[in-house]
Length: 262
Ligand code: KIV
Image (cartoon, rainbow, N blue to C red; front, side, top):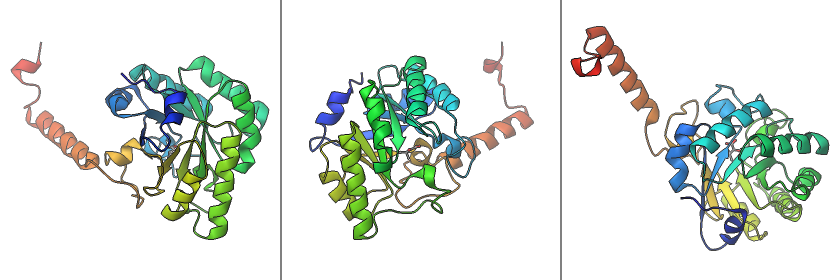
């Protein structure tokens, strides 16, 4: 049984690496629950499930639907809903949507993309009893406005801005931060600059934990493979092979067998 709480997550800093998986449905949430400290219902579902080229089309209704499913599959897990593009455009909109998340799902927290610029939003949510996971560095929701998915913290100025972002989000009340797509040496400095856990994705080893998108980890997502992704399984090849075997069995009449019919 997974006993993760806000307190155990914070206490893990400098003690124990945190493992986070994305999950979008009950089936995989159930499979990952025993190994995960947290399950993140990421807006990456637009890309890995929805076939989109970025995450911007995801809606709060879609996120709530998928989060309900994840919470049903892994009822003991610490589940985080990723607030999608536009769902925290103002403090009022953010509070309205985050309250919906807490009322309509069993999520333990929400994730907000952005550093210093989102301080007021993070404060407003945490002051209203909503736990917030920050997300700084590469911001996928800014991909269109900033010219794509670009590694951050490449020079001293860029790294120092992310340090400021981390400190601002911590001061605003976040319990942990996702740090995405940042040079490894900058990530180490950013991680050491705050007292809350920093969960890396494409941010090297010198962080407090790692998150991977499940369809990358299992090798189902083939459109592209970022350098930081480790595919632990060749899911795409396996699924194609199984589909071809099923089709062949249907065509030859080998499926169903005597034992597989009523
Ligand atoms: O949407 C997502 O899956 C995420 C992870 C990349 C951290 O935000």
